[in-house]
Every structure is written in C-alpha cells, then in structure tokens.
Amino acid sequence: MPQTIVGLELPDLQKALGEGHPAYRARQIYDAVYRQRVADLVQISTLPVNLRKELTSKLTLGLPKLVAEYSSSDGTRRYLLGLEDQRTIETVLMPEERRDTICISSQVGCPVNCQFCLTALLGLERNLTPGEIVGQVLFVMRTHQLSAASEQLNIVMMGMGEPLLNLANVIKATRLLVDREGIGLAERRITLSTAGIVPKIEELGREPIRPKLAISLNASTEEQRRELMPITRKYSLKDLLAAAKAYPLRPWEKLTFEYVLLKDVNDTDADARRVVKLLAHLNAKVNLIALNPGPGITFETPEPARVHAFQGIVRRAMPCFVRKPRGRDIFAACGQLKREG
Ligand code: SAH
Image 1 (tube, protein in one colour):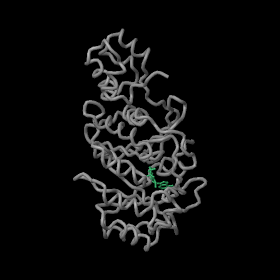
Image 2 (cartoon, helix red, strand yellow):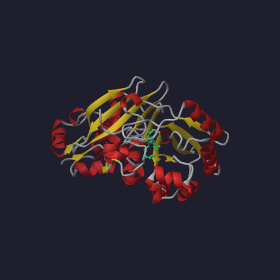
Image 3 (cartoon, helix red, strand yellow):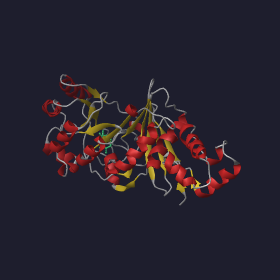
Image 4 (cartoon, protein in one colour):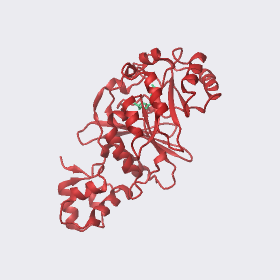
C-alpha cells in the first residue's frame, strides 16, 4: 500500500518526498493538505505538474472515504467512514449555535468491556493511525467548511475506542491538530476521554502537547465500578483517583469526570454523595450522562427528575453539568457507536 500523507508531520513529509526537492516543497504540500484541506493531491496547484505526477505515483492523500451519513432531527450528523483496509469507523458532528464539536474515534472497535456501551460489543479490531485520527477531523471540516480560526471548534476523542490504549498515535494526531502552520486548532479545545488506564494517565501527563483529560467514573464504589467497567479489575478506582490527584493540570484546566446514570443502579442520592466524597480533593467538574439506550443493553435510563436531583447534590460541591443527548435517533450518542444504519 502506498504511504499516506495525512498523518505525516513536516519532517516525515520531507523524508517521504525523498532527495532532490527543495525544502519548501514539503511545506507547500503540508499547507495544502492541512491548512487548505485539499481533497486530492492533483489539486495542489502550486506544485509543478511533474512533481504532482511523481507524488501520486508513490504517495496517496489518505483521507477516509464516506460510506454512509445519518442526519439527526437535532442537527447531529453521524458519519460512517471507510479506511484503506476497508474497515469502518464512526465520526460525529454536533453543531451548536456558537460552537461545533467533532467526536472522533481512536480505535476500530474497543477492547474495554463497559457493560452499558454498544461499542464494547465489537471488541478491538485495531488501533487507528495518526492519519486516520486526523483524517476524521479533516473530513468533517472540509465537508462543512468549518474553520479553526474562531476557536469555536471542539474535538472530543470520545468516539469508538479507548484513546489511552493508542496513546502514541493520539499524541501525534494532537500535535498535527494544533500545529499553527497546519490545522491550527486550539490545544484547550481538544479533549480525550478514558475509561481509566492508570499508567497511561501518568504517561499522558508527561506529554508537552496533549488533549485535556476526561475520566469516565461511572460508579461511586469500587465494587460497583468493577461490575460496570471490568477494566477496573486491573486498574482500581483507588489507583485511578490517585493518578487523577497527581495529574499535572495546566493553569486553565480542570479534570472532567463523566458519569453515566443507570436507573436504580448508580443514580441514587447516596451515589451522588459518594461521588462528591471521591472527587472533593480534586480540581474537578462532573458531566452527567443519562444512559443512551441500545439493543442488547439491559440498563434503563433514569427519569429527568432523578438526573436533576443527582446533579443538585454534586453541584453543591463542584461544577456539575448534564450532557444533552445528541443524535440518539440516529444512534450517534455516547455509547451508541456500533457501525450500523
Ligand atoms: N473509552 C473512552 C472513550 C469513550 S467516551 C471512555 O470510556 O471514556 C464515551 C463516554 O460515553 C464515556 O464516558 C462512557 O462512559 C459513556 N457511555 C458509554 N456508553 C454509554 C451509554 N450507553 N449511554 C451514555 N453514555 C455512555
């Protein structure tokens, strides 16, 4: 398979071009791919025709291909995107009045077996390359002519997969996303969410350029979390909270904890009080997500009044928001990405 350009940083691109080209050629290509977001190498009109021919003979652009698109009544779009090896992933665009959010995948499938999540049923097929991670963003920005300049574009790595189990590629993708010579997104507009891979949280904290960290808490006791998220058997809640405490936050950053509310399972006032206790010593905020239902998921969604009561208790101690479900009608909401129509 020819090497793909999307995913290459400038020095990689220089190397891929090979000897005999002036240094500015790589920069021209870099600019066309990441800043102008061309759909095809032949569209790079600043390059001599011969070079364009040479390029297409040894390199491909490597953007994902549209396989299917679903539109929700609330404006959310879910894209099924095809990769070079014919595998598919999902990417979601959630437009809002003054900001847009693109939710991208980090793996094909997911190895973390959360009991309430549909993606878990797929198991892990493989990691995405940096190019496949960045390619989702380029695809959506191109399709909807979104700009990075206004700082109103957010990226959340909360689609299929566990980003911290593909950390090196996620970090390389992040560097490409924030490069001012290229895509130019703001670092503080990119967030990754993890089920709690403790040693990788420590590794993430050592990266100079990295997304903001969100942690899926989803339970208020060790035992409850072990049942809902079997990964906890390996990485305990206690160790997770210790890693959160030690995590080097940047001055503008808070830790986000996500909490999926499951009716009569983890949604009681006592759960809310325990969540407050667990997080009280952290610089944290909490995002509550009422369960998005799906076929094969045995849990139920709590009533809105229960969600509000839970929020009321947590909010007395720290910022606490309820995440609006987006695109539930097209299976685009959290925990619903399963690659089907
Ligand atoms: N693997 C990462 C990234 C997925 S982010 C992680 O676990 O954080 C997706 C978020 O949606 C997580 O917080 C997850 O707990 C939550 N989620 C999963 N299934 C859900 C469902 N059915 N309803 C609502 N939220 C769900």
